[in-house]
Image: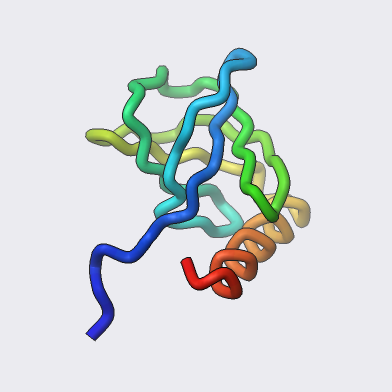
Length: 94
């Protein structure tokens, strides 16, 4: 049985030039769900930096308790970014 406590990829979320550590919980072509300890304003433009997939710009589209969802523009670049992040995380054992 798989553990619900699997490790999550640590990334950076850049807002107003300030990098914040986040844990990548889920990602797809439309966006990503992140665990974060710092509350951020809904609608803010941010940049997500993944250690292997690189960077992508996004907008904070949803806020939860210690988490948020960011929305990508659903372009081919967003699909490629999501696939690169998923592939990197699968091959690294995370």
